[in-house]
Image 1 (cartoon, rainbow, N blue to C red):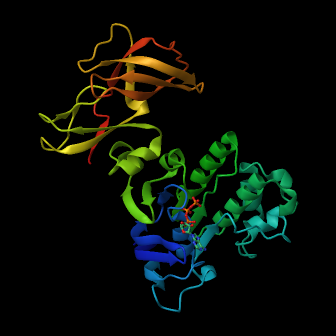
Image 2 (image 1 turned 90 degrees about the vertical axis):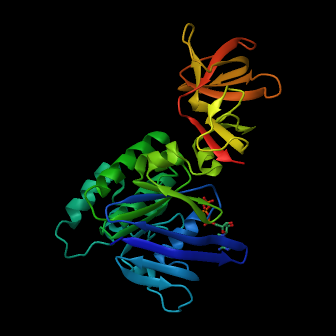
Image 3 (image 1 turned 135 degrees about the vertical axis):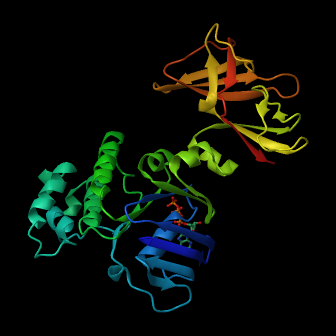
Length: 351
Ligand code: ATP
């Protein structure tokens, strides 16, 4: 039985629909990331699951029990849903110390209370702040405490809204790992909001992609990455080259050479998408049947990877191509490189 189940949930604000006909489950022990751009309805879904927003349409179950049903006045209040919450605006208790905040959800009779709190504060590098009050801490420190407060009572369902957003890169990686470790081996159903696709890839067992309040894909991270259902999902993971074309002899001509048209019939108008990271720059001597020549327009490096812009393609279809290659690669403007689409890495959609 799913820890959390949403069925045909819709929600409308005065400004318009925020969530439409949304349904998905979070199984016990599973981490599901809600992924999508700003304004796509992620926080609204979390607020509905928590009971912070009255449900207008659909049904929400926690551990099989209906906690909210559209149109019914009586809904289970947040504190009785057995959920651990961490929201951007769900602040720490200002009159309690860090230690007391973290221990808040634990029964006073729990003999392991003090030890547990000491242990987790250590893991999250917060030991030295145990006796301070929230307002004397940085935003990132408060955020980690809020995360621990949500995890502490081992709730059946955890609802986390961008739990790592205020942290620097080093701390974010560490806290993510600690959180994963804390959740592993528990039966918690975790629903986490993020707008960062890499974070979702790293943490999630499943990713639910939202676009304008609607579910566009609900699948394992690798599936979402390697078989994006539509152009919107394909664009989530960084820059993409997009070419319009028509299928001829089961192939589509693109500035990067012909690509297989998948299941599309000859004559179909299609959109071909190739991620900047999936355009290979061939080394001297390396051969590919379908490589093309690109003339460098610009090259900039981010250190770990470099971003090249090249002009490629024959008469009528020549275009600027964006390429991302690992490491520092800075070819001079005007130089020529051989380019090829990595095998199987062109996505084709109906136009
Ligand atoms: P972000 O990543 O920016 O936090 P989000 O995906 O969490 O965005 P929501 O906060 O759920 O998105 O908002 C979804 C839509 O509903 C947005 O268009 C937003 O403007 C609107 N909205 C959210 N809260 C309210 C409200 N209280 N009243 C009116 N409109 C709202």
